[in-house]
Structures are given as C-alpha cells and as structure tokens.
Amino acid sequence: MITFLNVLYSISVLVLTASGLVIIFGLMKVVNFAHGEAMMIGAYVALYSEKWHSFALSVIAAGVTAMIVGVIVEKIVVRKLYMRSLDTILATWGIGLFIREFVRINQSNSYNSIRPPITGPISVLGSEYSGYRMLIIFLAFLLLMSMWLIDHKTQMGKVVRAVIANPELARSIGINVDRVYFLSFGSGWLLAGIAGALMAPLVTITPYLGSGFLVGGFLTTILAGVQLIGIAPAAIGLGVTNGVVSTYFDTTTGVIALLMVAMLAMRIKDFRKSNTKGRR
Image (cartoon, rainbow, N blue to C red; front, side, top):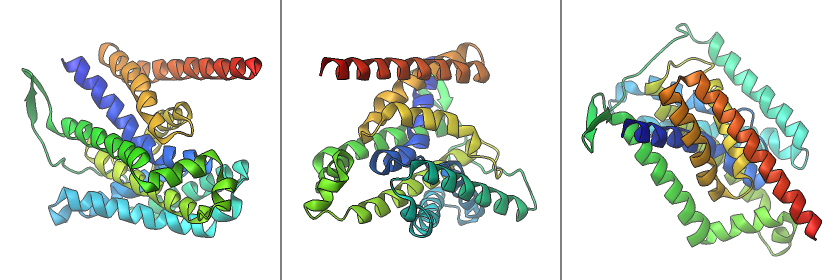
C-alpha cells in the first residue's frame, strides 16, 4: 500500500509541477525556462505569509503574486517574441536568472522551511501515510479534473482548442488570440506559484528551489505535447516509474529511471509520427 501511495504522490508532484508549463507550451509553443523561479516565488510568498495562520490564503496569495509577475513578463518581453521559439527560451531563461539572483541577494537567510498544515500521518486502508502528502494527491486529482472539465465542457475550452489547432484560423473567425496568450501565460505562472507554495512545506526554501522540480516538469510537458489533458498519461507514466524505483532503491535512481522512460517514450512517439507521415 505504501508503494502505491508513493506512486500516487510522485504522479501528483509531476501534475502540480508541469501543469503551468503544459498550458504555456500547449497554447503558445513557448518553453518557460523561468518556471522554476515562478515556483520559488510561490514558496517564498507562502513562507512570508505563514504568520496569517491560514495556509489556504498563503497558497492563493502565492499564485496571485506569481501570476502578476508572469503577466508583466508576458507584456514587456514575451509578447514581442511570439513565433521565435529560441528567443523565448533565452528570454525566459534570462528572466529566471534575474529573479533567482535578485531573491538570493535580498535574502539574509538562505535556507528556510515552513510547517505543513497537516503534520501527522493518517490511516489509509490500514497503512500510516503522511497526511500532507495525501492532501497533495487530492489537490493534484482536483486540478486534473478541473483541466478536463474546462477543456471539454466550457466555451473557454473550445477557444483554447481552436487556438492550439490553428491560431491564424482562430484569429480570422474573431478570436482574440493575443488575449488568449496573455491569459494562458498568466495562468501558467499562477499554477506554478500555487505548486511552489504547496511543495514549500516538503522542501528547503531557497532561491534555487525550482531547479529540483524542472527535470520532471519539462519531461512531463514534452510527453504531454500540445494537448492540455495530455498531462495525465504523461504524469502517470513518469510518476509510476519514479515512485516505484525511488521506493525500492533511492531518489537518484528514481530520477535516472524517469529519464530513461521519458527518452524511450519520446523515441516511440517520434517513431509513430514518422510512420504516420510515411503512410500519407
């Protein structure tokens, strides 16, 4: 049972980490290299708002703060670089570096931590497991369900799918594509900030906090592709691998196994694409 719960937790971390990346990449084809810094912003907001004695408010404040930074970045920098993928990668990497160093210089204490809202274990089918990790699992499932409902059951989802499929055609039928991009970039940073705040009680809060989540987040995003709901199978495949291997061996071996499975999955994906083109 513990192994199963560890697997669910690994999947949940990937979902929370990659959701913001998937939204930005799926809609805008922009790989946000400042995603780790957006998570770091969320973690620090959660740290400084701990005195509110309301973790839920801290998480909301973290998401909103990261979103504000994100929309400023989109408005000033990223908007001018649409359709220039390499330039957006370099720009977001530079922005992330600036944010990280700015925080590092202005932090007197480099290592911080906060208490989780649930401190003890809970019983799950006879097994004792971290209550806070169970909360993370629940919130990740809630996020996946929300993304599916928005994608399939709302007008917003139809607009998003139209922009993903063909932005120029979407523009020609009256969809404000620039506004969709703006909201998508802000939403990606919002989710990154929330993820950072949620993960803050489980890690040491430093200016380099986001780096530890980027490998899994980027691999999940690459496998998910441009379909927003593609995050579910990608996170499940990588999360099962990382969770099982980390439980029976160690965290480093789990990351290595995750990389190997991701590379294999990408090779299979490319092989299928080439076969499909060959049949045409």
